[in-house]
Image 1 (cartoon, protein in one colour):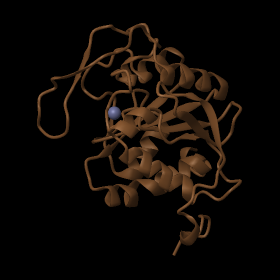
Image 2 (cartoon, helix red, strand yellow):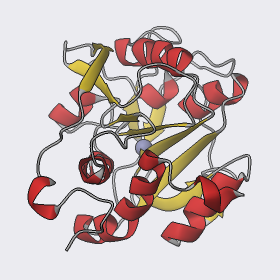
Image 3 (tube, protein in one colour):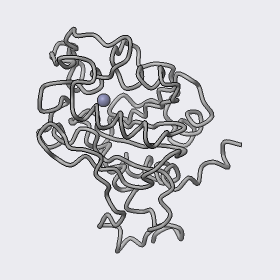
Image 4 (cartoon, helix red, strand yellow):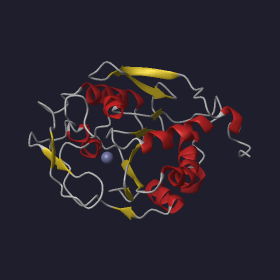
Length: 240
Ligand SMILES: [Zn+2]
């Protein structure tokens, strides 16, 4: 059974909301956004800035496909980094970690090191771009954010299992309460040139929603209902 305000299960296999193209990736793949085209919007929800975190794309897609036509209140980007998703890499096609390529004052040309899953060392090297904002995916998303003028942004990642909200906002607290994930003020290490750093300088509140390292069906069960409420704007009453 489906909830009465959701698309019926038999119809949820297909994404029926029109996709709007906001640019193309470095490999020429369309960059797509679903929902309102013009701002201001309450919220922008996005997934897969890191291409190897595509559980975030599947979870957001599940939520988007449950939203009835005409009820999509807030825009959604299923993959900020489609080339990375296609290739199964954290970086884009140029070897750049897009979450270190933003033109924030703390952008650094120093390579970034990350760890793959499990208890490994943080020793795998990626670039941050030839300059701040050098990558097509960054430039087009920046222009889209300026056009949509979201009052807040939610960016989905995996697998740290926390809600990172430096502003300790009502929305962050609400997502943490609904998902059961801990609310944290940072992820515990410096992130120069991150999307969060850029948003902070633009005075756009950003919540980084790190899905937990759980099997995808469990993630869908516990997180898609919350994402659905963000997309339909049916959470506002909870925030007073
Ligand atoms: Zn990530």
